[in-house]
Image 1: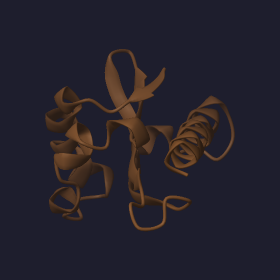
Image 2 (image 1 turned 30 degrees about the vertical axis):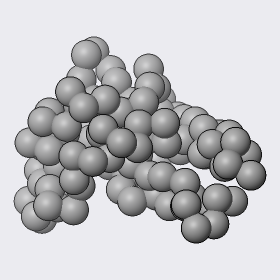
Image 3 (image 1 turned 180 degrees about the vertical axis):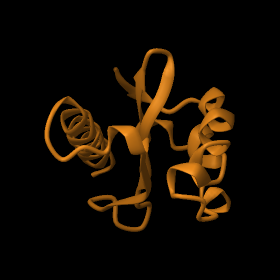
Amino acid sequence: MIRHLEERDYDPVITVIDEWWGGRKMSHLLPRVFFIHFRPTSFAIEEGGSVIGFLAGFVSQTNPEQAYIHFVGIHPVHRVVWGASFTSTSSILSGAWAAIQCAVSRHQ
C-alpha cells in the first residue's frame, strides 16, 4: 500500500536506514520534519504493517512549479530489478510524482 508518511513512521524508518545503506551513516540526513510538515509530498510503501520504502520531498516555495526529492529509501530485499518488488519501487515514485504535480498545480 502506498500512503503519505506519518510522524509515527519516523522511529521505525530511522532505526533501519543505516542498515538499508549497508552500514553507511545516513540517519542524520533524514530529519523528522519530513514526517510531520511535508506529509502531502512524502510517501511510504507499507507491506505487512512495515514500511519497506519511502520518498521524502516537498514543493519549492520559491519556484512552486518545481519539487525537491530529499530522500528515497527502499528496503534492500525489495530492490529487485524485475518482478513485483520493482513494481512497488516504481509505484512509489509514480505516486509521489503525481502527488507532487498536484501540489504544484495548487500553488500556481
